[in-house]
View 1 (cartoon, rainbow, N blue to C red):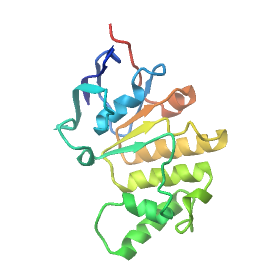
View 2 (cartoon, rainbow, N blue to C red):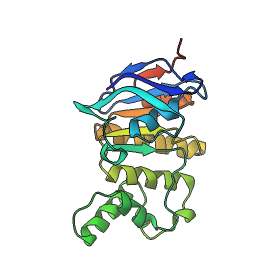
View 3 (cartoon, rainbow, N blue to C red):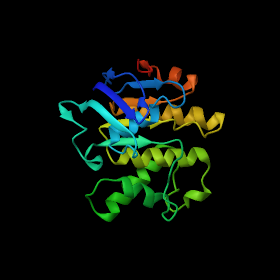
Length: 209
């Protein structure tokens, strides 16, 4: 639930106060022109706004206020346009980084292997991320987020850098996982195909008066 959320910069407010209920398992699309504050909105929710931008308003999951929590305690999964995989770790290492603590080394490795198999990447554990295609990297990035068991999913144009075939495949996968796991999901995008595929409510950020 977002209630009266707005962002301020030195020159004024980026968009009119936004109030929005994001339902579990529903992908809500946020659209608007470049510079309207779409990506900054996601950073505000995560608690990682850059210097020079300040946020107002309330953001809650259930009854818990997120804005009073440190970023690492908010339980939000964020996917960017670029996969941002760690180059010094193999694929399994990237997944284990996201996996919550607990369980033996063998159990954790099995969970990583099972996750890879679930998205059509069996046997990829020891691969160098640099050797993966864009679509494969995007799937690994998604798994790393999901293995952290987020309470909500934030998508910052995560399909934009993919070619047409991979864009459709990864988009279907991401939306299917969000629905299956009942994750409230916010999608920032410029792509109308993303909005149609998401199939949920559409919010256009409005300039402040």
